Image (cartoon, rainbow, N blue to C red; front, side):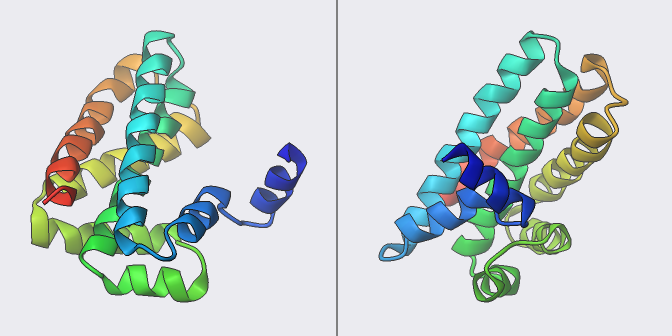
Length: 156
């Protein structure tokens, strides 16, 4: 199974997205609920890595929180980026950024603040591995606020 997942990811397939889509196929609200659940799981993992002094993994988990939240909110508000992702079978980072900008106008600036912080963490904290725990802490807190606000917006 691990080999299948690795090969799928090498091909650009987001296995988590595929599974969430299949599980929630008959109940559209289920996808939003599952994405929120996954975002909470990533936040807990981020906190674990923060406490353990691992800024690289903490950065990536925070990014994954924001990614799941933008997807869930885009679905809830039926944005064109969500429709495009459905049609193409995957999300692109530029589409997530575009969705975050639109969502900020609908639900509040916390979406864009969280997304921008998460993307910076993804690039400088994870891929480039240039930031320390102290460098990432305030950005992680913006992502945490994004999660708290998204929980309210998605549960209404």
